[in-house]
Amino acid sequence: MKSLLILLLALATSAYAEVAPELDASEEFPGGTGTTSDLSVQAYSHPMSGTQSRERREFTLGNSFFNTVWVASPSSTTVRDGLGPIYNAVSCSSCHFKDGRGRGLPETEGKVDVSLLFRLRIKTLNEGIIPHPIYGGQFQPQGIMGVPGEGEVVVRYETIRIQYPDGFFAELLKPVYDFIKLNFGPLGENTVRSPRVAPQMSGLGLLETISEQDILRKEDPYDMDGDGISGRANYVYSATHQSQKLGRFGWKAGKATLNDQNAAAFNGDIGITSSLHPDEDCTETQTDCLKNHTELDIDDARLNNVTVYTQLLSVPVRRDFSKPEVQRGRSTFYKINCIGCHTPSYTTGTNSNLEILKNQKIYPYTDLLLHDMGDALADDKDEVTNEDLATTREWRTPPLWGLGLTQTVNGHTRYLHDGRARNLEEAILWHGGEAQKSKEAFLELTNSERSDLIMFLNSL
Image 1: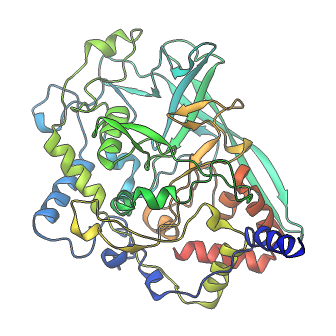
Image 2: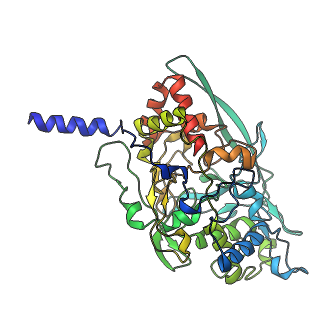
């Protein structure tokens, strides 16, 4: 019995005090052999190193459509028309500037950034949760000529002050969203408003190539190991495969493949229809929107070009990889169990049509699973499903690679699902739910240890 107790104590202790493995030289190249060495404002926009011939041509074509400014139909540019009738942005790059992260929120109170969209759901007594019957599943502020947009979203802030045990302070700004100038009446008290900022595009094809088995190995929905971290897979309907698949992309892991993700974003964000999404988000109330419906704005070939583009986007090389303070920060990252969700590495599988993505040792720092992130980050005070199996409290662990170049590429350091965190320290302090113990451990660190951890994150 005594030996059993010692074993259980050892297991419990190890769950919150992981020892970092010896540094591997391959960590300097988080995207494997395709890692790019460019650390300029173009750092997120290169194809995987070694991309050649037909794949490079497809990447270039996809890049062109990714940056295309779409216009209303009919127009003289039939290849690039079909915008709206209602929409959030006129191009993919409007939100993913330089293939990077959207800003989301302004410095001061006011209108939210174009890169921040809102999914709308209604809680019902009998059906659980459904898309908003008047505004549809996504709030779209803009409309083409003759079609009214749905309104505007403005943000105000409430200040939250946090004191570390060693006396240092931090201030968080809690966003409070107001929907104003609504053209079709109030949203209603039962509306769930889920903000989603445009994420960074680097390395998506590598994430798609991780084997499902490797992802599911980290699942622990009933927290059987007792570390306070569950992790659930989100199974979603794939329009590409016409069947249920493991969700990997989006803030709720709501899309299974990059083709699914791209087709849905074209449709929801720009109003571009495709064979996968032939209808725009016009409800019966929005008659002007219905009158301006268009069909098949982007064909399968061009959609595929964009998908290849997103699959081949490379990951930048690590900076300050071997500095002692960065290595101390890496050790702290393990010690306070950030790796409980941010899984450091995988070797990609062989399920891609692109040879350059196969069998690569990569360091994305994500498990691609859903985690309850606590009250502060929840979409709604009630826990209801919000995107397939994902609830209003759950978010998919975002990858961390390329994180430290956000300022260089996008000119800001806004993080989390709506950009509320103004820097990496704030991003950590917003963590709750399954990450609560790791956040508490972060609070207990010395100022120097916290600084080392931030330096490590900025090196990714």
